[in-house]
Length: 274
Image 1 (spheres, rainbow, N blue to C red):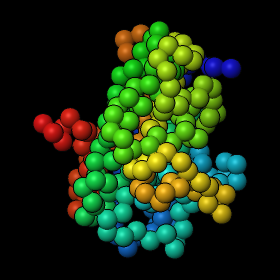
Image 2 (tube, rainbow, N blue to C red; image 1 turned 135 degrees about the horizontal axis):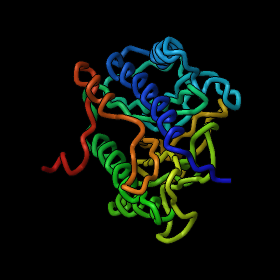
Image 3 (cartoon, rainbow, N blue to C red; image 1 turned 45 degrees about the horizontal axis):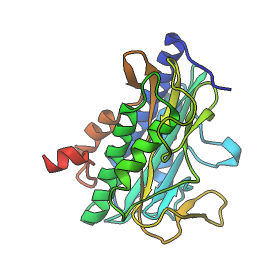
Image 4 (cartoon, helix red, strand yellow; image 1 turned 180 degrees about the vertical axis):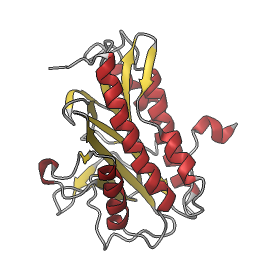
């Protein structure tokens, strides 16, 4: 069942999403080569709890951490650990969720550390740009398939990228994962109609090589089968009569990153070529 949110509920979800982005911004301000997944996980959890909230992911289905920290060929659901030490040239996808005031927030950002190969930076730009194009498609009267179609058409115009099929976006509210599922591929005019009050997390996951993925022995980490890099960006949005309302805030994250010389901000494709 799809639950549509009132304006008041949407504002509560926005507050949870903004706290998520405060946590991601804190990560963006400190992340560097030599730091570990455990280091940034601890920092994010402390910030979230200091604001009176609970990490959505910790304990969810048995997941042991606050953040999903996925490096290079890891797509999503990477378990942060002390042995997961970041290196110059890595891209680090950080996914975070928060539960506060009865509602969840969810967002993700991929951080490029140090001197990252230009082809990998382009992967990040393409993935990030596809997110905003998908958001533009999330209007009242459109369908879920229109969102996935938009991501797919943009990403797959170049044959060197693969969109992960096994993992999708989702509805969000009192539960971390609600209906409907929001794939990053699909056909226009297919799937549930987007109505005012729908809150969804849109999250393109794009591999530099093939679309195929595998799950690691830890039972959580999903990685690209061909071991090529993967990028992941996520916003939570509300569908409104005047257009999509982005409830999370990556500008907050990127402003924090600007003071950290160890990480590169990921501009959109249009900005990169302007």
